[in-house]
Image (cartoon, rainbow, N blue to C red):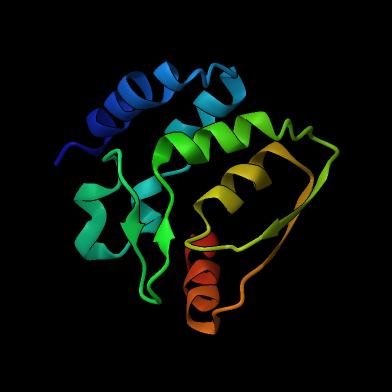
Amino acid sequence: MDFEKARFNMVEQQIRPWDVLDPKVLDLLFHVKREEFVDAAQRTLAFVDTELPMKNGSKMLQPKLEARLAQDVGVRAEDKVLEIGTGAGYLTALLAKLGCHVYSVEIDADIKAQAAENLKK
């Protein structure tokens, strides 16, 4: 699979039509690799316009929702962010690139450990 082409198509066909137009956010979507935040078996689904199941029964948000949240929160470079529900860590990574620091909490220990591993990458 050509991940770069899939990423481009995700941005142009899903995210821009959802009025995510902030150039900083759009640029981040090309640099923070979403496929690195999903299970290996789901890598080819990382760019699909759907929620992806996680180990504890929760779900990773659709790419367009994560992008819209990152844009609409309006995080500035000097901001500190509190995120409730780390999940896979993808939105956490986007917010961290936009702001000064992200404090993220996750109730599920296994998901927290996986998110920490994802974020180290």
